[in-house]
Length: 375
Ligand SMILES: O=C(O)CCC(=O)C(=O)O
Ligand SMILES: [Fe+2]
Image (cartoon, rainbow, N blue to C red; front, side, top):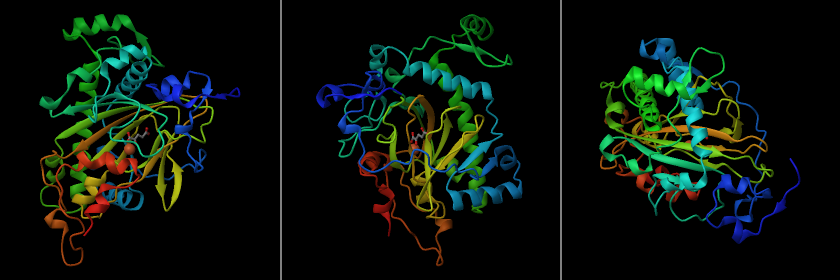
């Protein structure tokens, strides 16, 4: 990429998103430059466990053992055979790409307000004490339905569907008409997200039931029942000429029960921290990358740990991802499950309500709120 000049700081940060900055032709402003070295080319974690969700659902002992081992040794896994067709995954990816390529004014209709988590923005809520991240995001609560803030749900990009079974996906505007005729409703961007959310909920339930089984819990639905809240976060990482000096997402663990992540199908960027080393997560286009969050660590009384991860930037190519976050209700008191506390494993954490509410305070400091709950 051509040499870039540095952009004057004030002009650079005033109301601009990472996407806008990437298009100026200047280098990233000072407030985006990280002083510590970022290993762009971290070794590829080729042996991240791959778990077959269909085998979990049929209670295969071998797969349940593999799941338990994946969660304790790696703290993450690639979920395959989860039942969501590749066309749906690609539809979601394309939808997100198209959203972030809408004119800035159009996207700004969905701008996040104040310290609200939901909406479109180039930074998460709460005062920033650290460097900015080279990414833009759209965060939406999907469930419970009565908590949706539809004003943040994009009406654009234009409704679309894709021609399936025709080699590479081709966007066909006429498919919209077909969809209208066949299904008698318009296939809006909202509808695509709703469809995807229903499918991903099903996957989450199968994974959580299997997790309960690996812990020999009496109630297989104990995690499922505790996670009524589903939020979608669409991430957009523009390319950056100084990609080894900026970060897409700072090191963090998710504040969720569990996160089901759809990665970009071509551009890598996600890294996990394993044994104090950053490793790059390979892309399996049809897989969902599963990360246990802080609240699973809490409920499992520390048997499973939330995993540190971050996102690095590519010098030439943009990257997108779709994170589906499953949370407990903020009014629900969350703590270690009784069945997982005994003399050998005494209670490790105090109970908490609204863990999510305090999450970003810790996030900006690269800390975990759960550590403050340790007994
Ligand atoms: O973009 C990615 O691969 C990871 C996104 C992520 O960690 C998040 O949204 O919390
Ligand atoms: Fe994350």
